[in-house]
Length: 128
Ligand SMILES: [Zn+2]
Image (cartoon, rainbow, N blue to C red; front, side, top):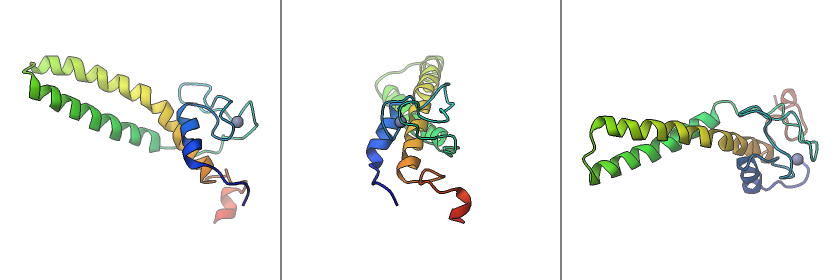
């Protein structure tokens, strides 16, 4: 089964957009495009299946943060609707763009640590 893999460490390295295995090589070569393999340790990443989980997590986190902040500000002020829109739409867009890449990295780190989708050295076909 191979050496044990630290799930939290792999997810933290992925969140910091580094290779989950060695923590040195960059995990992305575009905004959301992951590298095919780590330039430091050679771990391959082309077969990861992050799919919809990173955007789902981003929407979940940003939605809860922005709604809570909006309701908090609404409690202590009487800002007009246009002011709320002027504040919370840019905050929502900025938070989403800031969080999406680290959350994709953490997802790839989780898959690597759990040996999912070829990260265990076996092909998808042999799992069936
Ligand atoms: Zn590496």
